[in-house]
Amino acid sequence: MTGQTEAYEAVFVDLVQKSWKMFGEMDHATRVDDIFLGAVISSAVRLGRCLIDLESDGTSHFVRFEDMSNRSRMTFRLQHLTPTLMAAKAQGHQANVTIGVGRLVSDLGKLWGAFKQEFKSAFVMQDEPGIVTLDADMSSGYIYAQIPLIWRLEEYLGDSGWQPDYDKIASHIYCCEVSLYKYLDGRLKLA
Amino acid sequence: MSLLGMVNKFKHKGEIRESKDEIFIGEMIYLLSLTGWPCIGFTRKIMGVEVTATGADLQNVRFRTLNDPVLYSLHVRLDRKSGSGALSAALVGSKATLYITGEVKNHLADPDDLVNQWATDIKNILKFPLMGQVKVNHELNSIFAEKGAVIDIDQYVLAGEQGRNNLNALLMGTVNELREVLKKYKK
Image (tube, rainbow over the protein chains, first blue to last red):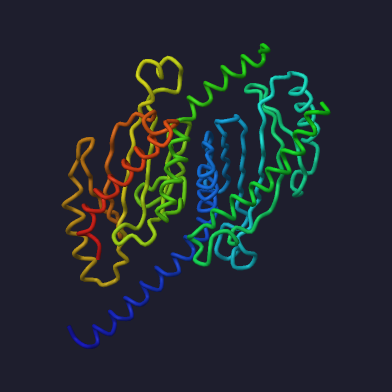
């Protein structure tokens, strides 16, 4: 092999390696929501909950958990708002997150009351964060209170973007749950 | 107990029975997070293309095997065959096929290495392993090793600490086996 060919190959190898590096950055940008969702699942299971529902179409995700000891449920909906590297570099990895809590109710009146409330909720501007709405699952007897929020996902994934802070995720979800249960229980007493 | 309460209790039992594959996946994501391997997607890779292939009884989850000396990623496919209904659960239990695939990724740039890889690609194309054996496959810069098994989900979920230990042993045992097969391909 001549010296000139070696020099050409060195440039070729460098171009390929740089491409892999850039591809890795782009690949990570599209996976941030999946990494985060996996961390939510892991955090919930660590607290003794069971994952009972998992739906994902690649960008929109929904998971539901149940605490088998008291049958209470927690739902988590995630939609990545900046799924490309360019959008993420400009705005950070933002996502619509909707956290919900559910209680099993055996009183038909309460269920129906929540169902009516859910009907009214359909007319509320859903794209605004921080609005608590009620939802009733008549078939299984659960009433849910849920709140949409906007989270910056990179705050939870460590410096490398690959190492989720499970404690922080669990703690932030728990804080939302406490407030939602307070609201839900208050509404159920009034119903 | 009210009538609605009884209906709810019956319905709840059914929901949990139907959700055993999701519970299994949740436990697996938790156990692999303890190893430092984050979940990176709920998709399946076919011929280099990722497709969303998760349905009511089919789960696909991918993990990045950070800091592993050989593996780059892990893919798990759980296909539930029975136990969603009360009758099949009582008769045959919650049977499923579990496929675990390990991936070695070689970021090859040297033209000589690329030529050598094609030779091993062709050797593996016509191999069709039986259930329980490891199948090796090459796709461009990735080499995959896959092992399938028929499992009883009830041995691993809603079975307390023993169930979690069983699942951990199944996962780690399979991962070690795949790593052993793949280590000779790691450049």
